[in-house]
Image (cartoon, rainbow, N blue to C red; front, side, top):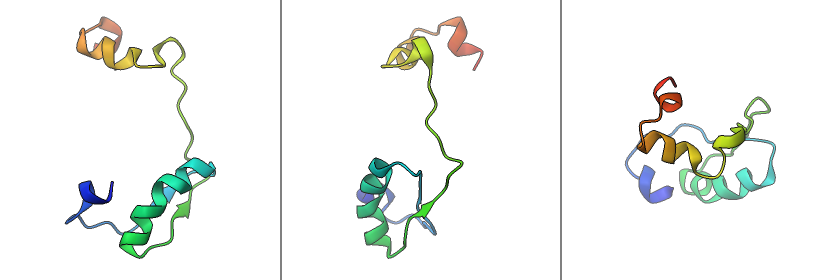
Length: 69
Protein backbone atom coordinates (compact mmCIF):
# COMPACT_ATOMS: atom_id res chain seq x y z
CA UNK A 1 0.00 0.00 0.00
CA UNK A 2 2.86 2.37 0.82
CA UNK A 3 4.43 1.95 -2.62
CA UNK A 4 1.08 2.34 -4.35
CA UNK A 5 0.38 5.63 -2.55
CA UNK A 6 3.91 7.03 -2.87
CA UNK A 7 3.68 10.51 -4.30
CA UNK A 8 0.00 10.89 -3.44
CA UNK A 9 -1.19 13.36 -0.85
CA UNK A 10 -2.69 11.40 2.02
CA UNK A 11 -3.86 13.44 4.99
CA UNK A 12 -5.41 10.69 7.08
CA UNK A 13 -5.69 6.93 7.43
CA UNK A 14 -9.01 5.52 8.58
CA UNK A 15 -9.54 2.08 10.11
CA UNK A 16 -12.48 0.14 11.49
CA UNK A 17 -12.64 -1.11 15.07
CA UNK A 18 -11.39 -4.51 13.80
CA UNK A 19 -7.80 -5.31 14.76
CA UNK A 20 -6.85 -6.54 11.29
CA UNK A 21 -7.55 -3.12 9.79
CA UNK A 22 -5.17 -1.55 12.30
CA UNK A 23 -2.52 -4.12 11.36
CA UNK A 24 -2.99 -3.49 7.64
CA UNK A 25 -2.89 0.29 8.00
CA UNK A 26 0.05 0.46 10.43
CA UNK A 27 2.89 0.49 7.85
CA UNK A 28 1.18 3.21 5.81
CA UNK A 29 0.38 5.33 8.85
CA UNK A 30 3.98 5.00 10.04
CA UNK A 31 5.36 5.99 6.63
CA UNK A 32 3.04 9.02 6.54
CA UNK A 33 3.65 9.99 10.14
CA UNK A 34 -0.05 9.95 11.00
CA UNK A 35 -2.09 8.14 13.62
CA UNK A 36 -4.88 5.95 12.17
CA UNK A 37 -8.36 7.28 12.92
CA UNK A 38 -10.87 4.68 14.12
CA UNK A 39 -14.19 5.19 12.35
CA UNK A 40 -16.94 3.14 14.00
CA UNK A 41 -19.23 3.68 11.01
CA UNK A 42 -16.96 1.71 8.68
CA UNK A 43 -18.20 -1.85 8.42
CA UNK A 44 -17.71 -4.85 6.20
CA UNK A 45 -20.29 -5.47 3.52
CA UNK A 46 -21.70 -8.99 3.35
CA UNK A 47 -22.59 -9.94 -0.21
CA UNK A 48 -24.45 -13.19 0.46
CA UNK A 49 -24.15 -15.47 -2.56
CA UNK A 50 -21.74 -12.98 -4.15
CA UNK A 51 -19.08 -13.66 -1.49
CA UNK A 52 -15.79 -15.35 -2.32
CA UNK A 53 -15.07 -13.88 -5.74
CA UNK A 54 -18.51 -14.39 -7.24
CA UNK A 55 -18.92 -10.62 -7.58
CA UNK A 56 -15.80 -10.30 -9.76
CA UNK A 57 -16.85 -13.28 -11.86
CA UNK A 58 -20.34 -11.85 -12.38
CA UNK A 59 -18.89 -8.47 -13.41
CA UNK A 60 -16.47 -10.16 -15.82
CA UNK A 61 -19.34 -12.14 -17.33
CA UNK A 62 -21.53 -9.01 -17.62
CA UNK A 63 -24.23 -10.65 -15.54
CA UNK A 64 -27.47 -8.62 -15.44
CA UNK A 65 -27.24 -8.38 -11.65
CA UNK A 66 -23.78 -6.81 -11.89
CA UNK A 67 -24.90 -4.42 -14.62
CA UNK A 68 -27.61 -3.03 -12.34
CA UNK A 69 -25.08 -2.08 -9.67
